[in-house]
Image (cartoon, rainbow, N blue to C red):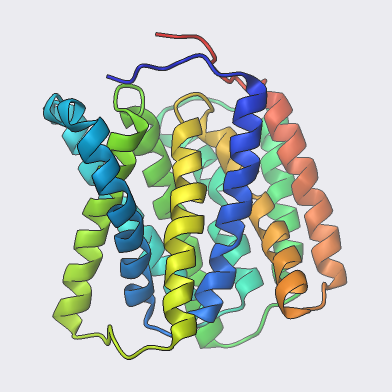
Amino acid sequence: MDARPTESVATYTVVLVAALLAVAHAAIFVRLADADPLVTSAYRLLIASMVLIPVAGFTARAEIGRLNGREWKLIGCAAIFLALHFATWIASLDFTSIANSVVLVTLTPVWLAVWSVVALRSPLGSRTWAAIGLAIGGSAIMGAGSARLGLETLMGDGLALAGGILFVGFLLLAEAARQTVGLIVFVTLVYSGAAIMLWAVVFALGLPLVGLSLETYLAFIGLGLVSQIIGHTGFNWTVRAIPPMVLALLFLAEPILSTALGWLYFGEGVARETFMGGALILAAIYLGVRASGTRITVQTG
């Protein structure tokens, strides 16, 4: 059972900003990694798991032993969704631009809205729908600025879209599990489970694992330590108190940050469409968070 200490809104804000910056670096690391997408995904989760397993072994062994059937089911399903999310999104970067891929994979508010209305029969407020509309418009403008025609690009865009839908499934499962499962236990078991699945596929396909460039291995380490440990673990910490829709809207900042990092690290130009779309996305984030009232839970229990 999670102890749930009291944290301030400022604490959540700091964690979210750090997590967003860490996750935004993922596209940069993937670009530097000259390896099969499945291998990149497998190494990313393996490195994160190797860091977390000793920590969980020393600090949370008793909690793992107390997990019930429902919690194990949530953790197992979350691991499946996370593995598929990384496999599809990282693969998309081989077929489409970084901008297209990151924009499409972060359209999670749209899929969460569909889930809320269709599956939960929970109507959304007008301001939330307005935020989603701004998000779609801004993402479309940003994507149009780097779009390339062709079947290969469409395949990459489809993989990125699939990655975003799979991440919605992970977010919903994580929210349910984190109500009773501690952070270290949850991320250790989910990352390790996803890593085992990906490595099984890598070995089954006989994909090359060794003899890669030093830059590629360093990119794997960056993905595991920065994007996964800091980024995804930070989001998994906040999901117990911040609704998935709010987190999904915050994820929309990732394309903007990734574009800025591309300019900083590689000197890539920033298109006019990026500024226009980015402005709409920032407006969507502001409106969506205001519509939700942030609903950050800071009480114990």
